[in-house]
Length: 293
Ligand SMILES: Cc1cc2nc3c(=O)[nH]c(=O)nc-3n(C[C@H](O)[C@H](O)[C@H](O)COP(=O)(O)OP(=O)(O)OC[C@H]3O[C@@H](n4cnc5c(N)ncnc54)[C@H](O)[C@@H]3O)c2cc1C
Image (cartoon, rainbow, N blue to C red):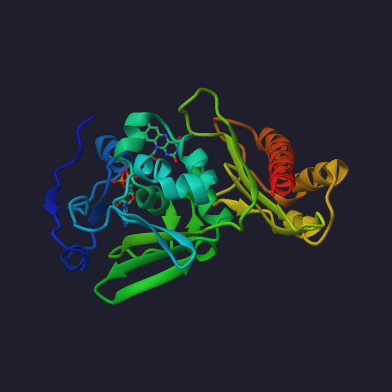
């Protein structure tokens, strides 16, 4: 199919983009186009105007800001995944991005575009929860900053108002020596995941867990941080049975739905398995790092 007619405007600055969006409630931001263009072609989206933010200067950056990895609106997924700061300080982000679609998609698709789009099967929203992200947007009313918890409100829905441009996201850099794991199940390589998990685990020198994050996707209308399971582990000296029990408890903490791709029971069972594997891998890595230190 062909898209319905629309006006295309290339914004030269963030202020211009904000004004264009404020002037027309039927306008939409265009970033890498990897979700929006297929939606236009299928007429699932029919904006009157596309405001292309892709050429605005100084937005395609990856930087360290106050202990956070900050990513600008137009930084592509490939740029972020292969950046030395990401690889050295937030490697789980590189691993998660590597599971998005195919190389060509990651070369054009932006990190902020995926967060703004908020597909519940997408990797990046779950990583935003796991990495205590803050998302900053801009509109004619000025900048707004939100936590990842407040940002993702439902399937393909976020707290962004129609006239806001997501300008950056800050991912917290996990404590030195944190073990991590990113796992997902998809029918074929490159497909959207049926279920996935990002897990981070850090212990002190005595082996007591002092930082843990477990964030699932594909199990609801938003990514889910299983805080009850995290709380079971925090402050304890973990062993394999404790990790297995924590993973089993995951099944009670999520409420997936059935759809054409998988049943709710399947998603619940796979989620528990993935959490078990991910926690075991993250724990093994953090122990190895302690041993090497
Ligand atoms: C074949 C295929 C396979 C894919 N597989 C996966 C996958 O496995 N996992 C996955 O997560 N994704 C997958 N994707 C989607 C891909 O990750 C997209 O790149 C991403 O979802 C959107 O980023 P974008 O920059 O292309 O945004 P666009 O497509 O340009 O925009 C997407 C939406 O977000 C809005 N938007 C974009 N940027 C901003 C901004 N800065 N501020 C406000 N609103 C904004 C747009 O208005 C639009 O509604 C796949 C895509 C394709 C075509």
